[in-house]
Length: 145
Image 1 (tube, rainbow, N blue to C red):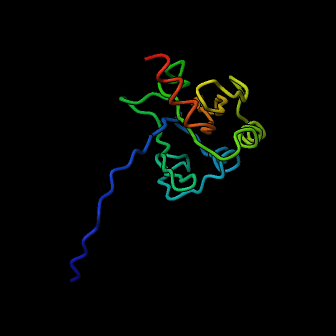
Image 2: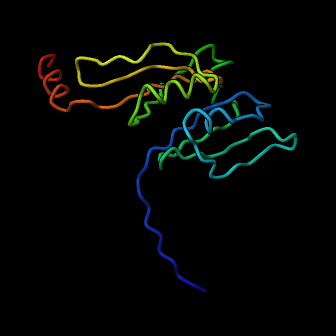
């Protein structure tokens, strides 16, 4: 028997609730280039829980339950997911082609970020962003502090 020591690294892994009965989660692959890491399906083939990675950033989808409502059931989302990428415009266009709705177009903000906001087909809000200038961010924070 091997005694294997595994290092545990603290990470943040959002879990997005989806409606029961969802089988097609292709949006995340098409929109963000997400790679499916693992999946547990219900007997009917719908997703119970699964994990994706977007360039090493992990998130999960989990069917809604008593303590976690999907945006459809809740009537809104309770979290906005920030996704930092190299090319905000290209990622937003890719997400829209995969079925996202643009809430706010790509804008360069005075606080040093280029950002856009979208909603995915399951009702989750995403801010697609890139830091353009640390100096602009630092100056903006100082100006409002």
